[in-house]
Image (cartoon, rainbow, N blue to C red; front, side, top):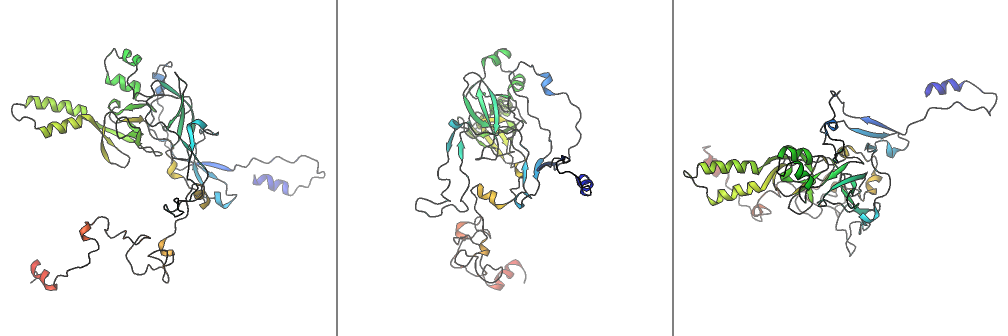
Length: 405
């Protein structure tokens, strides 16, 4: 681009009507990869072992493809530091109107019916429509993914699915790697009849896992193999998913209580004459048999009922936390007002305000309403907080007791 300009700078054309030399196209945005991807060995695709006539989506892939972010040419200061994950597969149009409803009270700026601010740092923002998401997915049969859409109410993406039997449309949480044309299915209402016949009328754990535990499928926890990555995890049977719904989050099935329950019963039957099981031990083993051990993204280990719902895979948009808004105005578009430090306020606005320089007036850290916020205030017992009278111990009494004299 620079060589072309330098070559034409010293040339004067005699006629202005001659066509000018076409200049190369300038790009407004570029895609960068922040993680160095290593060359991958050639592997046989998983789809080659699957019957092409089957109506299932491909299994989840756990290989990392790097972090692809889109940067922009700084034509304005607001886009100089703008970073966005590359999501070119998202649908560019509007959502299905009948599956949405308007968000009321969005423009009130965090104020109640009397006009007082009850929620700070709220104000402005574009109008939104709440997408109705099917977190439970009780509808049986295969569903085709029509498109992947952006949802302003959450960090993850959503997928518009249509039932092959009834044609009913519904929104579900999209798994990472899910694209338009994939087929997903829910087994919350039971195992289909064709799957029963393919297994010979009996439950084969290996065949059942190979046919059902695929990306985007919704299963009860007891049908998911150990070590599988899941998201949209429920907490109670018959209720929709509540855990691992944010972008890029997932949980892992660590252990099933049914296996340990069977082993424990056999051991107890062999040692029944020596030491009979107490009622408390029996209740404990029954509880373990009805629950499954799951490790969350935070590292927490939880016991969840085996009939709760879960979706195979990882929540979509895993590179969301690399996003940089670039300017303060984009926060205002999201209904977020600025946050001011109490140290920068006046004395009438905050307990830390006032004074000369950066000084909070020699007071302990407090909230805007005067409640202590640090120094173990929330961890100490209540009878140790804000004691009016403190009994001081004599100076030499403690030393004698500790053996200093």
